[in-house]
Image (cartoon, rainbow over all chains, first blue to last red; front, side, top):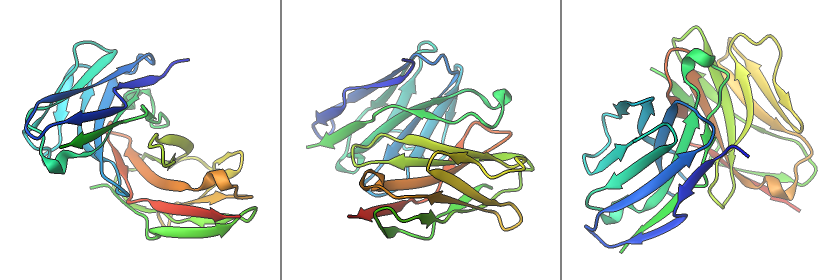
Length: 116
Length: 114
């Protein structure tokens, strides 16, 4: 089945130690998103890619970076994780708007990040 | 600017009864889409239902239906015959026609009581 895969499902890192979260998709969607979600809150968009075009949100800290080497893969790099970065990180994909507004996002299962 | 408002942080419903989760939105886009997602405690976001701004009829997907009132800018989710497995967070979201971004409401936590 076509899907969005995130690895790992749980990640424990140390304060200040760089960490990379990965996302892959078999849907061949050209838009990929990274969200941060803290407990009982709405997902917060960090950035998204439209093909290789990177779109950063104005309030996304510089500590968060992303790479999309090809259509299928997208990475979230946290350069120096702080305690406040502990959260669920959700990856999602969609077809672009030109495909019509009906297209929903397809989410991966998320990576739960714990910072010690 | 796009904005989604969910005014019910938490809701309780008795098993087998119907429940309505409220969602209002604000946009200047003439064309947009409205989405509802379910997020169980496991964390995965599950797409439930979609309503387009030009759709003439309210969307339905099994036990889910969307009460779309365009003039009032509301898109309430109705879950009929609630089941224990419906206990989860529910998010309303909107996507404008000219952007690839989705805007989420703050969510409603639904608890279904046996």
